[in-house]
Image (cartoon, rainbow, N blue to C red; front, top):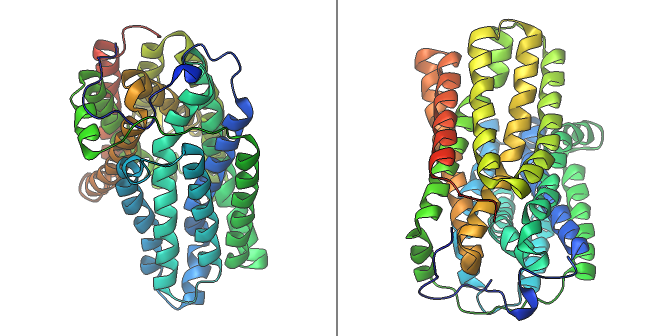
Length: 404
């Protein structure tokens, strides 16, 4: 599946001590990366649950406060493909420690922000940490465990996303109401500090094995399997965010659910994602093509069920939970696919995936909004189903031929 590497070798080339036959997987280090991801995603989600109080306290509009989310996404998209280049001569352990320190600094800046510029600066710092961490996580996992255990390692790392997705918004909203929004950011800083301590205790030395460059990114893009994987990322992410961004108004309008029930349905979505993450790792260890193909296919089926049978509250709730399960399985398979397609340049491949994902999020949200405004909420779900079905077809027809 993987073509021979040409051009400049990335900083993740494996030496003889980091081969596919690593006898002792460094699971403690893998767990430390999961804690880092949990801290990052928690910090990323906090503004959404604290927006009203935050805007009132800083004397700005909610729309202006919402730009804190935009700033993080934009900077993350830039940082992801360039982080390996900027840090090309540094031990990867030091880079991870540095990114976690940026997470802590970001939360502290936000907690003590007195104006919108300071808040935006905090979110820019978070964007650097987020993009860099995501772009390097799969490459780090590849050096910590044998390649055959990569899906399991990525599943553990992505558990941080699942737990943060379920807990960050409701806990952030509760803390913000009881103790104030600044306290929520302080707690997020403490979470980051705990993750840093575990990383210091568990991450082994991982010296760079080569020099990364912008030529590396171009070389990776020339590989057919990388281009196919990025196409799947673009289709899945744009389809998902075009539809799921508007799932609440859909549940209010079609099955006509009260807000209390909608909250429970969204909780079921988060729990489904938690278990989907492990299911994705289980499938990817056995058949990578199945893992990357079945997940978007299940999202497409969920969208179809919502479009045709969504008037039933029970059916709608089951479809949304299945959607969460499917989307939880998506990153594990795709990260594993990209690393196996470019094991010698895994950081560059990871950076390209994160950048593509961020672009797809923006595309999906914008296109979904246009569809909802001009053709109703159902049209966004129709696009979601179409895009994810195409992603499944591409994965099954052009995806990895075997599990390893």
